[in-house]
Length: 68
Image (cartoon, rainbow, N blue to C red):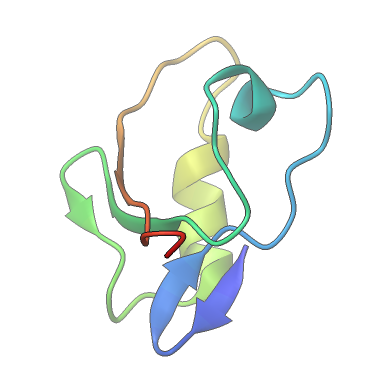
């Protein structure tokens, strides 16, 4: 994850990880983590929220730019 154009963006997806299993793609924007807006948060803050406690679920609200 990293910030591109002030938006939390997926920069790498590793095989056999939860991100790859749910279909995240490089370039996807993460708009919300559960009910928390990612805009204005640092990558470190977002990462901490996403990692959470082992075995817990979360909902990522994603925007996938068109490939055109």
